[in-house]
Length: 226
Image (tube, rainbow, N blue to C red):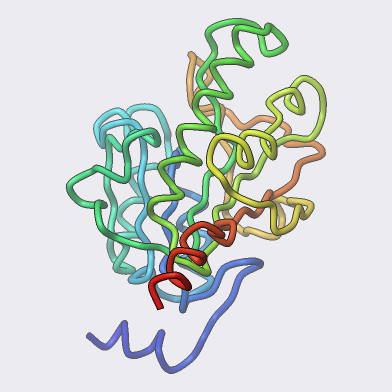
């Protein structure tokens, strides 16, 4: 189509993301982050944007969701609802698909206990590790998995880098500061509870970029078989 032809002709970038990347966005709230990327590219034909909630729930929770979803569809975005980050690699619309960038901004398990409670932290860690394991199956060999996360206490107790290295066999490529203003139109959402449509102060936070570790074992096997 003409849209795909345009993206091939001229690469457009916003921060870490390019119109030439195949991008999977997970855990979207009102889909304003997806739309920020799509507007920067002038197209969303290279993007798959997903939410855990159903479409009806998303539109009920977020005042701008309906508008954002319509704009994304018009820009050619593939939108998939009811995607659980733990099992997304087995989702019928996502399985056997590979992405150059897989993005999860401000992962959160919902408000069950207080944020600093060890039980709440364990719930968060469960969400993040499930995402990382699943994303590892879906990221291209040279691709990256991005998690944007607060650096302050108690969020630093989630130990995101340790989860990635130990549970998902991923390596940290780099950790870079995250600033909302670099993504025009993106409004982060609380996502659960009666104030789900409200934003929260992001404060000091970073985008953690992970990639697949070079698989030493498979390299050895390949060498032996030669």
